[in-house]
Image (cartoon, rainbow, N blue to C red; front, top):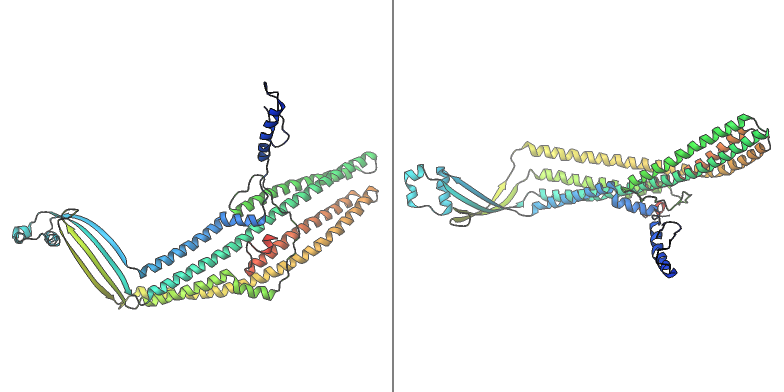
Length: 468
């Protein structure tokens, strides 16, 4: 049996199997298999691309890891509110007189014979297995632990807000790469059309030279133009592969072989916005500005914690100890419990820590003011660039019809011998430029609107610029 999958299928009769029914069964079994092997990968939509980036992009993974670090810091700060308990097992062997005397007392094996001078001055070596369970619990630390806990929680909140902003920037990055891919494919279409037009012009010019209605320079100019258009097509096809690679980089995952975008580059209509409204919304809801506010709160609690280090600290402690001549038993046990009050009378370390905390707070507050100014500038720049892109799109749309009509008139005049090939090539260049400018304007308008949403803090996987 011989079969080819993905196209037409041929079945050769097998020796001994001349029954048509058998061949029909074999064909029915192999046909679905061939269809599966020939199936193309599913086209990639922009929402799907954003979803892939959210799961695969290293940018998202790093930002999410930062939130886990901040979460662990909260757990670490809360540890001060719980007792610290530890267990120690220690095995020793020595003939030091003081060690031997004390060890016999701890093991409960001291006798009157041990008071002999020879035993006190030159005792035999003795071993001891010490098992100790001990704990310590802070009862009061001048509210330093409370301030540190609040600081850690606010830092965690800031980390979550920074993750939100990072995801917004990732959405914009994917959108930019996706539309760059669409633009690159559109440029290939334009390059293929102009290359075919240039080929036809070269053929027409050569025919006219042979007929004696044109000079050799016309044919040479047409051939040079054809070579230039072929070069444009080569560059355009290379640009598609570069754009595809840029999209894969933004996604953090490779595309399936042969996978193509589900959309084509086309105009989009977006609702108009007012500058004052966008700027106010950005200052109110931008997650990076909210993260700065959370960081200021964290720094303020850091200052409180540094001040609390000058106050008194009260700790309770206790331990239970077993001393045995062997690992299992044979000795004695003891316990101890108590409380410790510690007051710093003089230390330069705490003063330096307080000065550092205050400086960090001042720096963060200044950074917040600078960030708000930067957001205002970013919003205004994005707004005016989006408005300019919209106007340029209107202009380029109208210029296409004008350049096409001019090319038609010039081509008719050339075929009638009323103009030169130079004029025709100039008209073709103008028409090609108008087409290129139009699609560039379509691309820039979409990207500028997405940049405006990013500046206002509205961009998300559910934004109209992503879903429509």
